Image 1 (cartoon, rainbow, N blue to C red):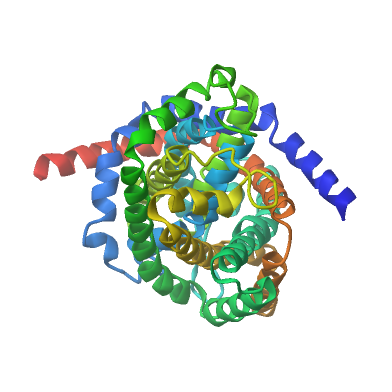
Image 2: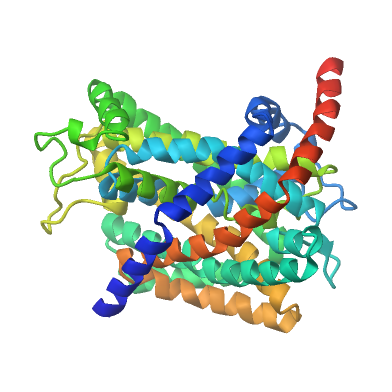
Length: 467
């Protein structure tokens, strides 16, 4: 098992090397410049659209669920352990400066998420049951001029997407839940695994409508709950906030500038800071993976560009708000770099728990535990839908889809009882393999994205004139 773990770690380091970082962030930069920063400039409009009454209206002739429910399903898949465990892991492995690179990737990720969801909505289809089926695989099949290339890319994305659902959306989430429950409530991991497996199977058998109903309630509640707890932790540690911000900003470009053992056992390089910041940022908001575009395709929105704007707000809520709060809470706690009872550096959920506990006392551990449980479980539900649609693209038989749901639910137990490092490394690898065909597709269809954006900008400006 140790040899396998080393192999997975080596593959993880390779796929998330400089080439992947350039492709991921570079695509976001290229699209942002090509679109003249329109997605960023229209973020206010997008947020207003998401919170409007119209976003909660479900017009069945246009899709399976309301735009708000589709976004909540997407956020259910994205706001998860990446916001709590992922941020902590990045700040240990890459230093506090990794948070800056998470924010940088999120800034350009707004446009990437906008583009992939716009295209997926435009090229979606209806399956045999009359449900919407969409995502980058359909964009590749229907949108790329070279049909043979499009079909091959679509197949690869669907394959990697189905596999990724077991990593980013299953194993790592279940692992974090069982770890949090064990730390806070001393419940054995196998017991937690059994309960999670049963709950997952109970909900996913109802498909997108069942998942979206749960997500539309759980996601807003859990997000507000965690944000309030995080802000309270930062406020109570206000005297450490300037030092924490200094470490975050300086160590993003010059890790050696913060020395003298300030961060205990933490060591970092700029490359590591970038690598872990971008990788964990993608794990958190999934911009560039194409996964969010699958849920966006089920929306009852009337225009592809409007759906793109609604979907991109997920990056804002996920990384720019929730991840930032987690990172500041950790940086201002003075806990980063400390050793746990086992003599090892605190990381993952244990680091975030201790950071909150530094200001909130034992209540901080329970608050983070509840946050992890709600965040991660909703992610399992959201990713089941995204993985199922990827699997359905390859094997559309309803019986095969049912088998996927059962196997996915059973895998939750496996994830709840495995080592953290191995689970996260496998998740990183699946993310990279999924992102590559999606990013290539975005580059191939960049002119179409620009054309659609320009078309809708006139409509948007007319709306502003009327309001």
